[in-house]
Image (cartoon, rainbow, N blue to C red):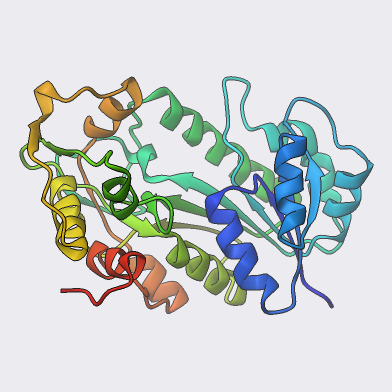
Length: 293
């Protein structure tokens, strides 16, 4: 059976997985909310379908779901819930070839734990509207999987970085800031490791329902990451900005309102996955094209 990956929400992470599986001979279909987005998908040599979450499936989407063997959902939920389930749940439940669904969520569902280590069994206590919507969407996907019998794996992602989206890029663009909030740490995940974990999960689907944290090994202060990136590039380290004086957006403030260390032990034990970039050091060095120091 030819493998066919359908990505609803062909964003940064889904594209990384698509490139990896396309190189292995998979058929790839990706959705976008605009004609410009579908053209970008097609420019990669993949099939494209228009889907904005506000209307039912068109003929192209109906056929893509019917043909798909694997489905990755990264479209964000909103006030009305998950757009994919709202518009496409019947088609997905009846998809004859579909053997695996991966739903991309966020570690934001855990809320703030004052720097403590947490894992997938930690109770969820989201603090932002976005994270509360993610919890509702996760619950809806689990209920759907149980009623439809489809295999579902939920992946809770930490801060995503990679080529074009990193402290290296910010430094080169002159926009990097070292915001200092005492004892604040964040986990991160390189986009290639996202693709690697998803590929490992597809190759070794563990349980009917499973939840995995997708994070690196070392939660670290954000100012340390910027300083390390500057060192790799041979650039001056930007001056520190006290958190209380930082001009942050409401979204930025919400990120700094949560402090936790997220374990990735289950990904390693269940899937046998070995991270290519276990800390920000290896990841930043790869983006900069130098050896990690």
